[in-house]
Length: 446
Image (tube, rainbow, N blue to C red):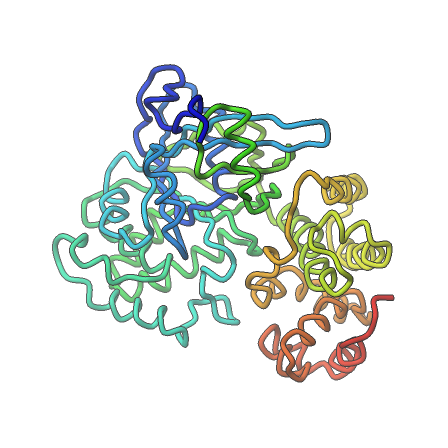
């Protein structure tokens, strides 16, 4: 490292000289998207230093290991076509390995904690086909057994046995209930349809395993806010880290690269207060579902299609794939099918589609297709399957939706009906759709 480069932390980069804000937001799923989205919004609006975030990792402790020595600070690089904007984000004040459930329990039991946000990915909710907790999942089953046997008294000593994100959350919220804690808002920020309603149902189901008093408290005092979130955040590379070192003079182990565009739509109550996120552009609406479906079916659906079809055509990034005329046409056909099932008013769909193409074509955002492919089976359930079901119910063939499904069937190397059974049992029984998917397996993109 060059002698002029300094480590990034609150001593070397004191900002306005104030110390870290108190941790009043708990976040589960400390990754690049959270840092580019909820942490950024909070940093922008919290001029008074009242809303610190205590963040916990999910699958790997790596992010906490990187951010811990930096006192939670990281560099956010907004990479647009005309250049980069750079900001040091200071809203994360604690970074923890997700396995430190004792610290999670202590924070959730603290009376000043007001909000819990989640970015644990679709797979992290561990849901069954009916939207409830997947009791066939060994980790879920283990956490259910733990919840049924929670001891009286201090839960922090028992909490480390919880392994799923929602299991850990329920243990922490139960500690809050036992401490006589105030109501709290839970804000899922993952690509799940009706995510607030869905998470509320799962939390109530898990709370019932603890006991009727716990279930009743969850029903009355835990508000679940529905959201639609949007900001493309590719994986950070060593070249990105070196660029940050050279441009800022700070050695940042955990910079985040993102696009200038960002969107956050929320619907629900915050009984213990919240940051003024609307000052950074967040929107609070009566019904988030149309915005949610627009984003899931158009942006996320197109990402999944490009990730499934692009590599076979020699593409590694979204920008390369959308530049392929055949893939661009496949995306447009997918959007045509989805648009038929979105409200014509209030979403400005032609402008949204045009903006998506512009965002996808931003070659300075190296959004890797292999990154998007993670948890494809779960993503198809929320991004493609609902449109296919709606198209079939309307008497159409859902041919555009069948294309990414067929590509997934080919990757799985299983009969189409078996893959569809996991995605949606009703589609698996739709002989015409199964036959269409089978005919497209291995076929070139038209």
